[in-house]
Image 1 (cartoon, rainbow, N blue to C red):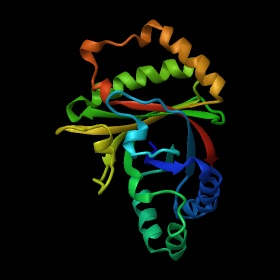
Image 2: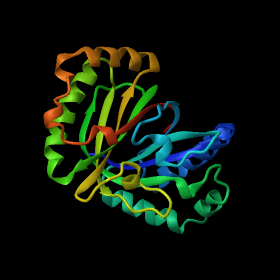
Image 3: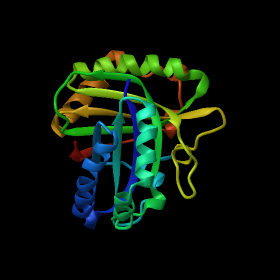
Image 4: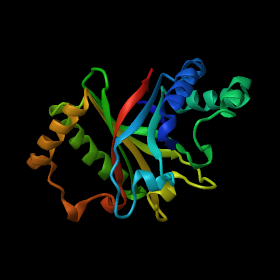
Length: 239
């Protein structure tokens, strides 16, 4: 199963093209280190939440947008080796000095995929999710997510990935745990749904919400939905 390095960051809206170019310049370098796929997705439909949301997760300021991005690896060992190379490569230091965003507010972590369903096809849009899940309910969550993935694919999704927190560090300013207000005994799930286009996503969600199989069983939910946050993102890098 794919190992995922997930990121969420705040980027000034006026510097979108600077960010895209910065990410595009770095992507081939990451691929040299062992990353099999680099995705950077620009916030397109990112709602405010009552308890948590993407903007609050990275303390987004006025005039900033949220980017949801991930690296894919064949396994954690490859990811760990890649991170070692990144830390020692002088090209990374040079790129880091010219980042078009506030790196102190970027959150990141390593996730082991527990659901990975693919129907094939290019990604034109993505829904991103971050949620707190009790450690003891990992299997219950996986079962629920696996059933939902089948429905999403039926209605047009091309890929569904659910990543279970494996290496989710504490940050000095922000981090995944604080983003979902994780409590003792809870882990973080980082997940996404890929769609061919935003139109396919919008039409797919209407069908999903009307499907009896997707009616929530609030009495047996394996996580606190009030602290889950989500948003729609348009890819600007997918290599």
